[in-house]
Length: 193
Figure 1 (cartoon, rainbow, N blue to C red):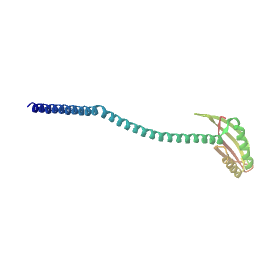
Figure 2: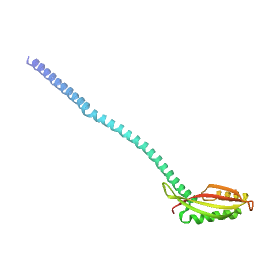
Figure 3: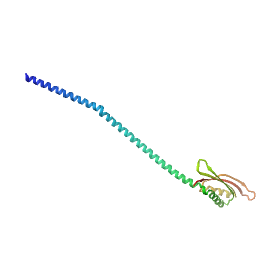
Figure 4: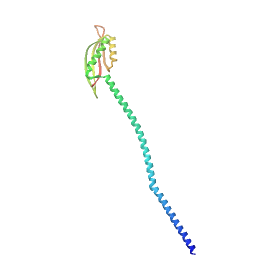
């Protein structure tokens, strides 16, 4: 009996140990599951959120890079237009230092080529409001000549390299020679050099 009771006790003891090992393994598995649920899974979720945030930031950087490239291109075009505009203004306007002499010589050359006589001239200089580097010069001149010659004179002034504005033109017939007496006002823009 003692062998059988010892065998029974050993079986029970082995069962108890197995049960204890099974309970320990179950507790360990439960602990691992809880550890994963509360420690590892949030790390994975944070990693996923970080990846999504990095991907979103990367897309924003690409979009903003395109915007910056377009703005740089536009700024380049604006700078090129500014340079071309400055060149155009320099070509179309007179320097304030030699405005009157250049205008008179240009009118004299056109009058001589057209066969028109310049009788008298008056000058007036005005500032342009809001444009501190630019002004306007007005020349009022009295001319004499035949109709065809006066038309040629106006055509030569119109083809001038400088931007001249014929502000006013009045013609009256002359009794003594049959030509025309013309009063003309020409405006020109001047710039500070």
